Length: 219
Image (cartoon, rainbow, N blue to C red; front, side, top):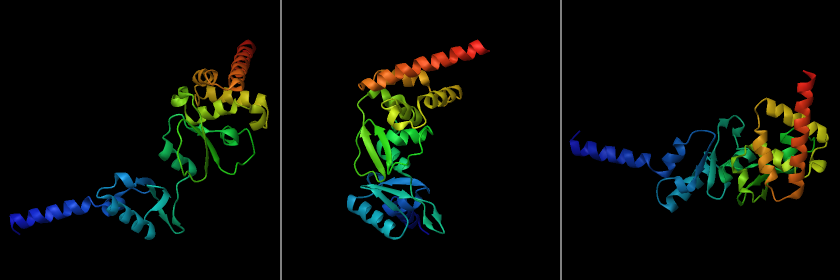
């Protein structure tokens, strides 16, 4: 094989590896594929994605976003509502709200019809998700579970069916296990515009302090 023929073959191979179809095939299972990040022209990307969906290689999640699941005997696995939300919103300041927050903390048996999330920015077309936008940018450093606690402090009488003492108990356990940063959570809750959240944060702080004092006294 001449040098020119070898060069042309390598060029052809390189081009084939950068086609949108090749990029889709190389995506790892259980990962998202964004139309905008695929190589090639817009028309070629859309055509490759549509073909991959038709052939069962991709699942269309929302506009411009696809999922390459793992193939099983029952078909391709689908992403969870939380995974789709994280892909669209990121993870910063995103967490459960309403009864979804109560379920995250095991404080209700209510099953909401859709996952209710609070976030700092909007997103359209999130299947299986009810989205509430919050304006407090201090939430950006909170974890999923910490956002859920701030949301519960908005109206615990509605969402915590096991009662306030159960909330205090579980928060104390989570703090002891280093599952949450209670100081950070209470600081963020105290900066919320919602008056009830601020009042309940102060109440929780006082109850946790009293609980800790009682524990030390008993010891």
